[in-house]
Image (cartoon, rainbow, N blue to C red; front, side, top):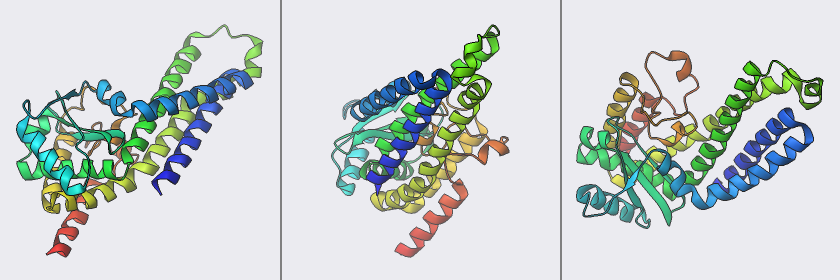
Length: 288
């Protein structure tokens, strides 16, 4: 199922990039974006375990540098039947975590310094169980490919926006290259479509990772408690400095959300945390 999901996702995002190229540069632009999308898909597949880690300045740590965290990941990876992933730490006071990598044998989990201070041992184990579930089910490959291509689409939209602001002296050829409609598609429609694709794949996989993560750590209630704490910080503190819309879906809780931004929450990359907690409590009750 994940293979089919990846294929459909790649096709949709590739289609958006080609459409952007066509709107901006006609048939030549479409051909260029098609080639670029293939190159990006190849690059994202082989280097997905380092793209996002570098963006968040996540530093890999050894068993000697972070013994308690390393041993916890090691134990949970064994519970999940997974190879030991890289363990990385992000210098941020905001509690959060994510996993990345193209496969279980090329994966990494990253946690912030804030989450290590804010959660107890069992709660941190629940979060890491959730992230290891993403690795086990290869959600991490999908997430990183989405982050890479959606980031490029957003960058192109920003370039087009500035071009529209300063490109007052446009030639009559512009009509052949899409004109105002093409520009609006590039600035508004393409980024919005990329966001909808992120939403489509993100919400369902979070529920699945919560359930599987509860099994891996052996305590769904610990994960529920962790989600409640992380949600509080995400909703009431400032967003993570490094966080971007293109990568927000990779975290266990959206690092850009804010309790005052009700409209934005309607388009959240994550399902409601209260519903996730309720499902984990039902899971724990069923295991008794």
